[in-house]
Length: 361
Image (cartoon, rainbow, N blue to C red; front, side, top):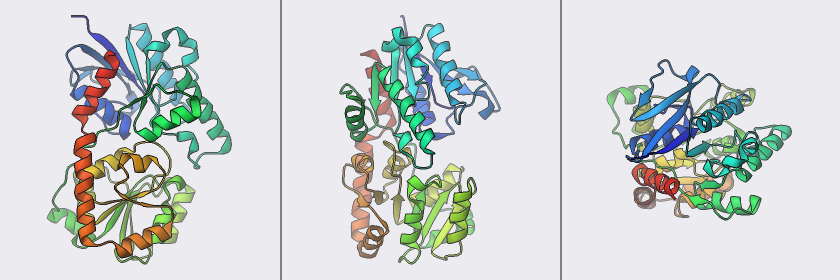
């Protein structure tokens, strides 16, 4: 049987340990059908070991980084190598190869692009960088024959910004997130687990509305546990210094121990999602699978992901009102609704099948 050769370019590598694209690659490997031969391009410096195979897919190790100003080299190498080795389909995770794709216009029909979100709108970047990223994304979209939108909001954006009405809506999965009972060890380290608390997990950058959330919870009826990379920038360090002395705000550094992280987020009273830019955020889909009630920033993308059945806010006052007035019964009901929607729409086995069906067509 002649297998379809699929290359995945843009995920940092396997096994997954960084971000939504890596998780996507992980489950495309997990549920790979027999008629596909899959290669994933991986960042060598991010892994101590460099095996040739993982879960039945080939791993190609690359010396270039997948983030920062040099990310385009990682994508360019992957695209060039995949074409040279006869890839029938190339899944581009993110638009960082956008300026390379015009040189391979005759192969346009092989390119399947998932931009993830609208990165150029993030206000953490300078005006010049945002302009460059916008042109990069435009080139990637215009030079890829097949587009994946991770929710309806992203599909609408393709139409409005580029006039492309041919995108395929395929979401992210989130069923790798599991509800975990609190252990004595976690309780000893995080004593707030004994009481009701809200939780937010995000990079500490302004487009995630960090300060808005902290202002809303500094005197709320339950504390906010905010988990993020507080020590990366001068701005994030300043925010931490400003709010860390408030007893109602528990600011924790990023937690990479998944069982511990799941204990915290799956036992919260309400999950706060402040992301204002992008498409379907993987952490939001995971929270839905955990069956916790959700309070999301009202930006369209988050509304589409949660089927307009979560709670939404535009400012700190909205958050305060909702937290003050929401009942235990309402919280429990909404958590169950989120879990039901997640099981119906965001399971990796189904997502992988949709991708492979799309590649076959």
